[in-house]
Length: 126
Image (cartoon, rainbow, N blue to C red; front, side, top):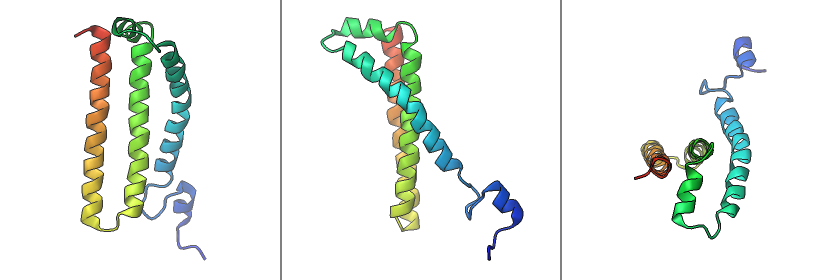
């Protein structure tokens, strides 16, 4: 016998009323990372042995700044989702869990923002 209402079963909502949203966002961000990482690795192989001026020129051309920023945003969002699940599953004290989640989210925003800032500086010069 199932305790959920018919509406709850149709919407797929679990006990925390989030349903599978977190699961799907993490899967979709993982799928989005595949072509972005392939592009980055292929481009990175071309940059082996390049000097700083060549790298700056590469960052500032075509769609490279946009793709780099998309890679950074997607990668850090995907990492944040994965770390959130790990913290929620393995840290049992409520205060420690909330503190860890807050610190992790601040760190992800700080590091991701710094990476985006670096791309912008490389694109438009310093």
